[in-house]
Image (cartoon, rainbow, N blue to C red):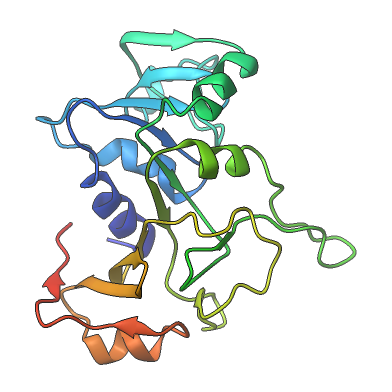
Length: 220
């Protein structure tokens, strides 16, 4: 199981019966593949879909139906398709119980940076998209992010260095190594991966972490 799958599986555990949940581009859309059968959740995609299931098998792909990342989805009985105006009315109107978003950086104040401008002549980061609307419109913000960049640099910082998408918005951070809750007192380490130690998580995190006595083990 690679890091992205581990994160997506753990993120899906945050889904509860009756929730309306938006899934963003990247790791978040993978969470649709790991929702427990007993959990009745309605997924929303900012490109104009309410009610969809996991990625289909290759021979079952319907080319007209995709999530925010452009990946194919399966329709369910109550799938609805609509325009962006309707989609963002849902988002900005506070009708989403939760959004799961990717990020480039997140910090110990709950600030998040998940978009970037061109950073070399021929290389570009992702644009803002609908993240800013989701970060102020959804009731709970879950960030799914690999704990460190490819060069080993931490992504969970004392203070974000990139352009912010929103301030003090994040509620929960899920990585392949840990689950971290954002509180008024700071970042609380709630869970660590089975083969990981608290010391390793602290070493790989720039932000200060509050370590409770009952840190649990993540399950996937």
